[in-house]
Image (cartoon, rainbow, N blue to C red; front, side, top):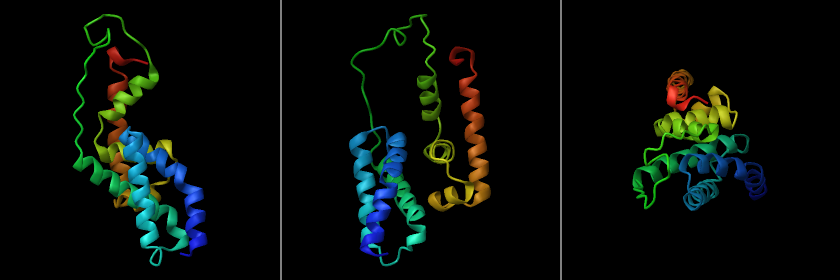
Length: 161
């Protein structure tokens, strides 16, 4: 990979990689660090990276660094104040985005990544397999199970959209 090809890859895929990592980590600074680390690793290994596969390589590296980051920093967040709903109020909010976000957060890191790559970023099974290191049939099975878990959470009477 030449310097020009590297710069072209940065221009083409930086936003997609950042969105993917940010959606999973939900912390802007951590997402920026992971993405920058992925681009740094690609730059250092540019001699071994095929320009045709730079997107796959970049997402694979970013995904692996995200998983490492999650393992290293198990965040504990303490709440100082509670919303009306958390205090036991019967007032329910039918906020589809909130419910979907809660449902996604119930998934494991792998399941969430697969759902995000397939349904949010639009990758096919083979590309997802390359990014995550799973084979295509594993991707399909894990994705199916994740979607079942999402559906089960979303259609609960207390969560009905």
